Amino acid sequence: MRFSALRTTVLVAALVVPLAGFAAPSTPWEPANAQARRFVQDTMQARHIPGLQIAVVKDGQLVLSEAYGLANVENGVAATRDTRFPLNSATKSFTGVAMAQLAQAGRVDLQAPVSRYLDDLPPAWGKVQVRQLLDHTSGLPDILDAQGLLGGSTEQQAWTQVTALPVEAAPGERHRYNQTNYVLLARIIARQAGMPYPQYMARHQFDVVGMPRTTFGDSYDLVADAATIYSWFPRKTDAANAPQRLSHWFYDLSPGLWAGAGMLTTADEVGRWIIALSQGQLLKTAGVRRMWTPERLNNGEPGAWSAGWPIMGTTPDLQVGGMGGARAAFIVYPERQLAVVVLTNLVGANPQEFIAPIAAFYGPPPSPQGAARTGVPTTDASRPSTKRTATP
Image (cartoon, rainbow, N blue to C red):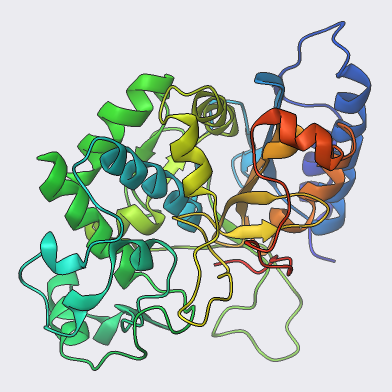
């Protein structure tokens, strides 16, 4: 038994109806919303997810925004639309928008070498182009290892260690996900914008969209209304045959890593951010198109990422988004004018794996002719043909 009888009763009761929600009544999307609600409730029970938020954007409107379950199990605190959930690595999509904004303003050239903007790097690092940081083809060593910051040390000590390591590949030769790339991007943003990364994000994205709940931090920071993070994974001290049990999960992020994984927000606010992005409030349409175009490797093959956004799939239509911590994900379907955001407080929930069925409730992908009329690119040779579901 994963739950005690008491916890099972509390959680299942919480899943019966959304504890807080928004759905415009009498809209053509209400049948789809009803299907999405049932699917989410079933999925939460099947995956033993304590708390969850969902937001669905369709045709530039937030058509569904609801919260289910518990933000804190042991104290019976309900998840609401205002509960803050961590995005973890899905933060990178927001950083991708920040870099596209600076490029649009002429403050950054994404094709330029990093050395144009940062002059305190090892010589081999300076040859990397800015875009190769965004799409994880820099070939640089990672500032994190399996235990966290290199050497289990401070951020500055880890930086000293990582800059002493040799590069792992020539820039553009291969895709390898790592956090060093986004540490450098945060520094470029701060230098070219003339303000720290968090301040830039607040001024040029959160305030523009209206995202008062969005902030930065980790599970050690005192963030009001933040969901408690849980896991079913065994503890290091558990015996091999110990029964599964719900436990707290802690993660530690120094401020220098926030551009890659530091945001806490709500599904509702991510949905509004996607609407603002699609309506030109954050970037011009051409800038969004460029940002969502997969970068190419040196051999001409399309890469697994665009500029800050993983390519989640290309068939039957383009799917870009963000995913992080094995507990948060959002996928944008530009050709359908659709986006689905799912945030949870369970490590291992992997919502990117069950967003596609939710998206299907809101209609099939458009024909190639219909997609062309939306102003977004249709599937072509510039896109990889694989579908990504792994969590960064």
